[in-house]
Length: 261
Image (cartoon, one colour):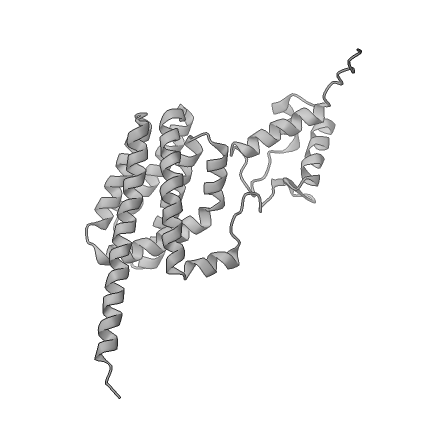
């Protein structure tokens, strides 16, 4: 039996595979502009026509967007799990915050475990930058605008956990966390406002928990990293459960204070 001839792969298809890998591994993020064609062609060692052909294929598949005179971008919607209207809806539902914490408990423990096992030196440099930015939010004097401070802290917190997901080298975990980024950021902002008001030690506790998580990953202690991530979410869940119980008690007390008809 004669076997069919093996056709050589087109150069543009090879470039497509490399760009796809960069998107999957997070090197190219949603909404990010690709380097100029000349630089990309030099990086891949290919001609610009072959590169353009590859880009056109990815545009046709919805992975890239070409803007007239403005370059090529990774599609904004790539990996976006929640739209803005849904974010606003979830933001005002207490049970949605509980559900997100339950999801974070599973995802972030796994991310931390794999990050401790797989993080490269470059990964750890980026994680250290994110960790220091978060610690700076904790330690500096609070500005007059507490809401702005919480928003900045929430963004730094979310970026720290995203950096851990990047260190995990698990593409599904990374893109799940990226898709949840805006929801995660809003969840942190909402949580810390109530937590700081309820327990005076919360700020110090969060600092210690994030430091323990960071150290476990940097030192390659995978099981400790998993435990630290779980303990952190457990603490947040505990404080918020206490907050909900106090709100319910106040509501009952107010109802009892209403004059009888």
